[in-house]
Length: 121
Image (tube, rainbow, N blue to C red; front, side, top):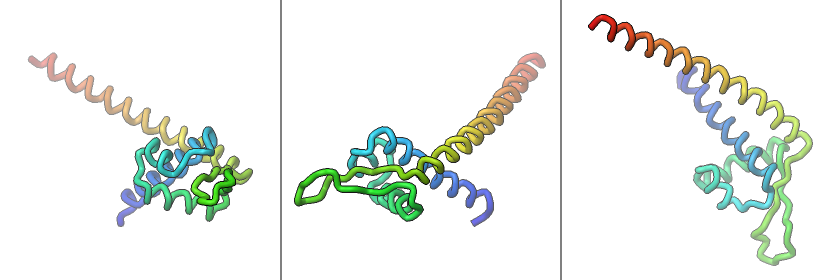
């Protein structure tokens, strides 16, 4: 895997982790199925992502009903997870600003190109 591909994979994984934490911070009572639907992720990918976040100590899972089936859980973001999410938010914003600036430059260049070709006619 080349450096650009590796970076893209890392960004996608990082974005998924960020989005999971962002949504769970707002609504910790979502089921995995509801969360996967909201994020547009497969249930398997969401489970993998949740496990990674639990292993990092950024979220924890607690059973929130007295149900014998134990199907309902609450996902709690830990203090470390709150700190990491704040850092991720800054990084996410900086990356999106860079992407926006690069896109704006590309749009400007295309506008100039079309104006120049129109002027030649």
